[in-house]
Image (cartoon, rainbow, N blue to C red; front, top):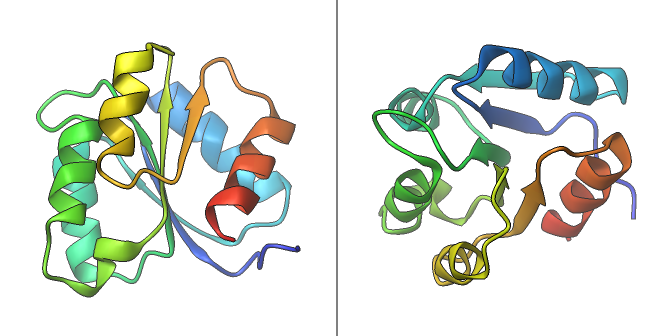
Length: 127
């Protein structure tokens, strides 16, 4: 399967360096429609204003963390409640993975990550 490089991706990460790294990684492999948010609140605003076809979100963020954002999206009555969401985190705790799985998480990427890992997880999430 080949993933369309035209999909609209939202990268949600409070650490600006990591957010820019992810955006650059995606751009370097050909993705052209990438939006950024520094926390879950900004991400929610973007979701309500723009079409998003894939969201990559950090777990630990101020104001609204990734799990809270996931829950809010999945319980929304809006059209975006079914978009693929992937969690990016430094924690690989089993209980976190299980909790996120309860909310229909589409993928889990543990930091530090490689380009190959990110791309294969994106492909999995979009199947």
